[in-house]
Each structure stands twice: as C-alpha cells, then as structure tokens.
Amino acid sequence: MPLPSSNVLSRREFLWRHGGGLGGIALAWMLQRDGMLRGDESASPRPSASPSSRPHFAPKAKRVVQFYMSGAASQCDLFDYKPELIKRNGQSWDPGEKVELFQSSPGSCMQAPWGWKPRGECGKTLSDIVPHIGECADDIAFVHSMVAKSNVHGPATLMQATGFVMPGFPSMGAWISYGLGRETDDLPAFVVLPDSRGFAPCGPQNWQAGFLPAAHQGTTIRPHAANPIADLYAPKDGYITAASDRDGLGVLATLNRRHAETRPGDTRLDARIASYEMAARLQVSAPEVLDITRETEATQRDYGLQDDVTKEFGRNCLVARRLLERGVRFLQVWSGADNGFPRRNWDSHEDIARDHGILATSIDRPIGAFIRDLKQRGLLDETIILWTTEFGRMPCSQGSKGRDHNPFGFTNWLCGGGIKGGVTYGATDEWSYKAVEKPTYCYDIHATILHLLGLDHERLTFRHNGIDRRLTDVHGHVIREIVA
Image (cartoon, rainbow, N blue to C red):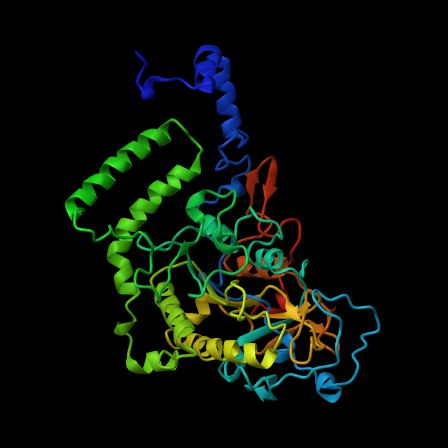
C-alpha cells in the first residue's frame, strides 16, 4: 500500500535528512543569515537592505500619487510651449540631423491644436486644453527635459514604473511599501486604480513586487466596477453561508501556515496569507472608503462626476483622495488602455486633436480638483503628486494630424510634499524635440521622490541573485532645484 502523500519525501528532502548532517544545518544557517540561500530573498547581508519601516532621515512627505498617462502624452501640446512651432507651422521640419521615427517619416512642423496662456502668478505658459491643471501652476514643478531609453510602449512604460525597461523588477510603489511599510492595517500600502477600458502595456507588471517580498505588490481596485476588489466576498450562489465561508478560510489558514513552516524564505505564501487577512479587514473598510455618495454634491461636481467625459477619472481621483486620507502609502491612477483601435489611450498617431482632446479633458478637471482638495484638507504638504507618461511625441506631423513617438524629450510634473511650486526644470530645444538642458531620467524622479519620503535611494537596497538591487539601479540624483 502506498504511503500517504504527506509522508512521501521529495528527493531534495531525502538527501537533506540523510546526508545534510550538522554541517548542512550550519551551512544553511550561514547562507540564510547572509541572504544567499536560494528562495530566501528577504534576508540581506546589509542592515540597509532590511528596513525597519522607518525613513533614513526626516521626511518632507508621507505618501505618493502617480498619475500615469498610458500611450505617451504629447509634451508640445500640453505643457512644453514652443513659439517656434507656431511660427513655422506647416513648414518643413529640419532639426539639423537625420531623424528615425517609430512608425513614420518626419512630416512638417505642427503646432498644437489649442492656444496657450500664462497661468498662475508664476506665469507658466500652458495649453488651453489643461486649464484646471493650469490653475494649479503655482504649486507645480515642471520637468521638461525627460528622456526615455526606449520608444516602444512596453519597455518605456516599465521604465517609468519600475526604473527598468525589462520586466521582473519591482515598481516604485513596491519599493516604497518595502521601505516604509503600511500606515494602516486596514488598507494596503500600495493601491492601483486602472482605466476601466483595460491595462496599460505590460499590465500588472507595472505594479508588481518583482524580487521583493510578494506582499509589497500593488492591490488593484476598480472603483467603477460592481465589485471594485475582485474575490473579496464569497459568490452569492446559495450554498455558501457566512459561517461556512469563515470556517473554510480558517482551515485554509491552518494549512497555509503548516505549509509555510516547511518553506522558510518563500514570500509568496506569506503574501497570500497576508492577503487573506487583509481581505477580512477590507470587507469592513473598503465599502466605506469606496462610497463616494458620502461626499457633498459640490465635491462630486468639482471632480467632474456629472460629466460623461470626466466622471470615470474623476471618480478614481476622488477615491484616491479617500484612500490617501485613510493611510494608503502609494497610489497609481491610470489613464489609457492598451487595447487596439479605436484609440483608447494617449498614443495619438492619427489625430492629436481628436485623441488628446478628449483624454486631456477627461483628466484635467479631476486632477485640478484633486490638487485643490488635498490643499484645502491640509494633505498636499505631505503628499507628492507625480504626473508621468512613458515618452513624448514628435513636434512634426505624422500624416497630417498625428504625432509619432519621441523618447528624446518629454515632460513630467510634480507637486505637493516638499516640491517647490511654480518652477521649471530643464528644457528641450526650440522644437520640443530633444532635451538640451539638464537631461533627466526616471531615476532622477524616483531618487527625488524617495528623498522627500526620507529614503536615500542608494541605501534602499535588496539583495537578489548576489546583487544589491535598488529602484534607481546604478543611476539617479535628487533634483535639488525642485525641492522646497
């Protein structure tokens, strides 16, 4: 008769039990202590790689919101004002060098479909398609000299989210969760609010934990859906009761912990156990935090919830504010989905006025309301807001109305916790083609955000495959000019 499966030894277990001896036990302890035992990626030979949920120095901010425009928002149509494009609209474009584009040949100079106006006391000239963001110009630091390492959406999107063009690396939110931990036990440290139309290129890899402990990955919440958090409640099919659901989870917890005891250092099961425990708490906290009917009619109107164009992104921004004030550490809020034609993202190859027109309108009012709301509630001073996209768009036309990819110069902007408002950092050339003053990479943005959170980007490391990995790889500097 075969032995019960629980008594069957794997080959590895057989060799360990009968050949490991005290020498093997001692070796395993030493390897685990030094973070070199395969499967035990949570340990580290250096204290800095195992943070104690405390910053390295006094922080200026507590939390971060990353507004991510998927598909490549056009800097020269939104934020990067170039009179030369207006002056030479329709003329041949000649930047003085050969230009190889992603999907087309260079067309003529093409001005923005919208006008430009100085905004705020700082006088920052911004497009008429983003008037509400423009009203907040005195709180914003514009970084016009961003450069990407790829002009392909997937790798470039990962680079802005994780610091690497290759998959498998932790996102910024996961690093911040790992470095600072949660502010509350009732909500995750890292929450993602995707576009209802789908995910951006590379999907959940943009908020994965990578080689960090799995508990630091982002939790996806869909405020627009009937069930905003998937699988949070038992299905209503008639045979599962509250008692049986509770008892089943209890048995599962016992089995999971028994299994985990035989696999020290495997963070995946630990994360799953933690997710069940978090789910139980979310059953109480989530309905309240996601219930925007508790907000005044005036607040809902400010966020654009009564307008079909702005209501979804406005809902996400309003839910983001409610999550932040209840202790969520890092939020990603996405605009745009990678799901083909017709365009449902910022990848405006065919018609900038059509695509950017509706997308910019959909995010402008909600983001403006979000900034003002945080400011009124006293939350802006301790919350960093980052507006980003994977790369920019060319100053020349593609066809007659569109623009091709531009990784050589584009815009990010930041405001809030510790950011100096009403300033501009870096510059592109007269065309908005290439960064010519203070070229800036995502590493510099990430280093600056970590600095404002009280984390030294060179000290926040994690030992993986013999390398002390970090969010900024071997790059990055804090952009002191935009730090208040």
